Length: 208
Image 1: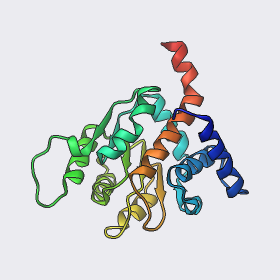
Image 2: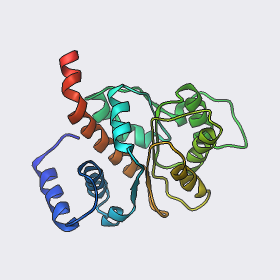
Image 3: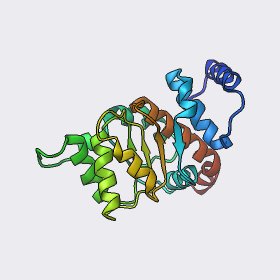
Image 4: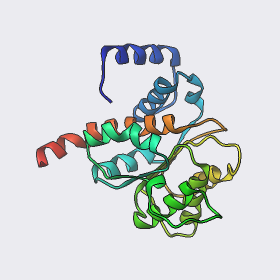
């Protein structure tokens, strides 16, 4: 993200209010970004990182892996950071050309179509629970092997998809309980992009 002095001041307040924690430095950077985006400190206890999720995600970003998102709000939220760093291709499930299907939502059908096209992509599901279910179905069928899944949809129905994702071997970042939305997904991606750029960006600059 583009930083201003007020951002630094806000993050300093977050740091002082959070106090002691058990997160790694990289995980903590993601957590504070989510809190900054939502002003909700409960996320400190709701964000779940699978083993090596951040390392896998950063490496995939640096490799310019395709990013697939479920809704335009996420696409817009991450566009600036992506375009000014690794410039990964970003596709939205709602804009995928698909044939109408009654059994699935537009987001689910679109993300399934894109997942089969980019089976090792980075997937960001911020809003559509049906899109997450479609992804997990493809993972369990061994049709795709994503580099990372970020899943933060609010959960009222079909919430078993998040639990199934957590049981898979796919690197993932999720939110516990019903809370979640596209803003959180974008905040996680932006934090991860900044971490990856710190780790890999100088090499990219020298190579270009």
